[in-house]
Image (tube, rainbow, N blue to C red; front, side):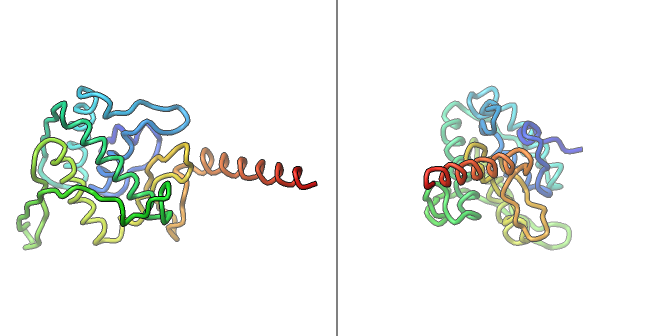
Length: 203
């Protein structure tokens, strides 16, 4: 069974196959009401997460294991890449994220390789080192997901206090909360209280 350490902290189900790696990277943030730790905050924690996530990715995607060693200089770049990716995912479904449209989120250029598989199909392969190789794995999975239509189901919770990444399995792809009971009910309660205050002020 594939285990995704970052996602497991938030109790959300992983996206299909290798797309779960992208989701797990997004889930390394300190999000949610309990403010779990940022798994990219220091080198030891980041390397521990990455080793497990890459092993899970290889198993989920059915590909050869990939090893990446992070240096101290990689941490800030990797966090910045993750944050830009988070803004892109959020803006792709909400139109904007904090006023930022998706076309204005610039992800870095990464190197990719390719090979023919046993069926004669071209498979993209991650290249590079350090944080750029992590970004290259993300690019491989984004490309695959955009081709098969699963990318549009990778979302971040619309609760501004949360932002946990989730894979929307609803029939109409209309989900907006990573957990309806937690974030959906809380948002509805805040909206109800705001409407009640407005009514009281206008009386």
